[in-house]
Length: 336
Image (cartoon, rainbow, N blue to C red; front, side):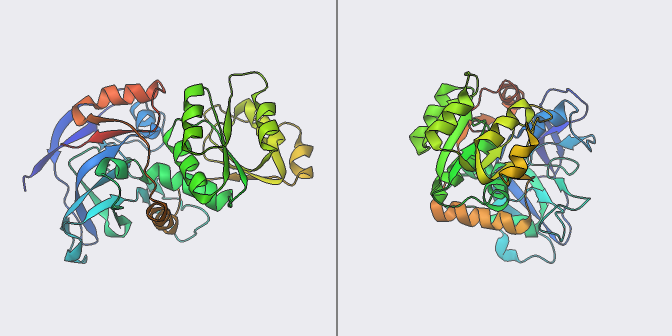
């Protein structure tokens, strides 16, 4: 094995993503070295590039999501892992409390070097066998979006079969994965988007309906066709949040994993306490939830939605596409 590898290394803010040579990482006794075949973009990669993320250090190899083959193991790790096709849990240092992450919790790709490289080192406990029905590219699209949506939908919002579930802002990886999980669970799934085409695609997969949030009265339309929602998974926040409260059934649950529209206006507080609504924060997930998510994907043969696959050399073009919001699903890098 050569001493160097190709990687996308960020050395300063607003730097274009280019391929460079760097040393292959040395592993410790509890770690493994994974030869990566595919990695996937998340919005955090764009935010790190622009300096809009906490804890940035340079130089750094971006990338939280990856899939590949174990090439080397540390002294305390079974050699049975060598040659195995794997998927990586990017949720580092969650800690002992399954309800909330520890203070030193981080996500792979900053401050630890990530998956936009030919090799990555990772704690062996974060390895999982790649689902056999997924390609490397499909598997790379799963970890961060899959874990975030699984926790938000099934653990925090406590979605159950036959319940009415609303997933807001489909098009991005987490929301699309939540739609797939909810449909597989047997929920009555509804979606929102600023694109009629994206809503139509979700309906073609099995969603019951949707509404374009650019249209006047979209929230009333959704409530009329659905009868209200038992649970909502939201990434937007902002002034539309009060509409989610209105659309909730009594004892409804709203799980939030993002706030792309900024601080939210919850509307009339009495609607929240009189309807006994739960508002639940959610971020990534613990190690057990990642294992459960992989089992759920295997059981239901779920295939993450991949928008487009790019070679490493086109990483800057790929991140620019993501910044424009043109993708439907995950943008994936094929590692050389």
